[in-house]
Length: 119
Image 1: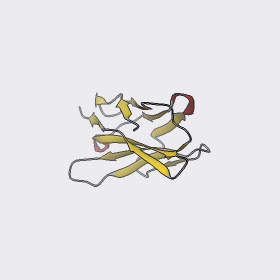
Image 2: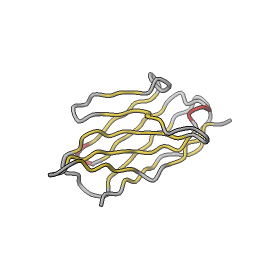
Image 3: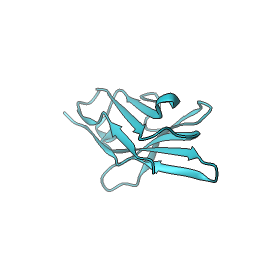
Image 4: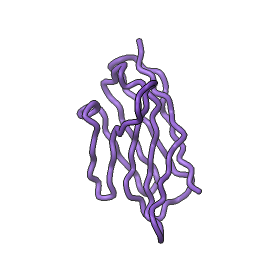
């Protein structure tokens, strides 16, 4: 069983920055997509950003130009650099990693980390 451990969340003022990290508890065999999602109170979980195995990145419309996703396969870690933060970015952020197994795909989720943007 793989555990994903998120770090880097917290309270930040509007316009500020945070960097989230998500590390797997063991070496992954073959990492496919690595992604960040978020869920604000009373809202559905939404995709923030995804980085594919070939390095292709996709961002949600609300974070384009402000957030940057990156990955370090050697460290089994995915990052989310969040700049120019807005109050509407306040949410619990979850990392998600897909691992290609010998048979099938392993789909792993972090426990979630709170990000609060407020003055």
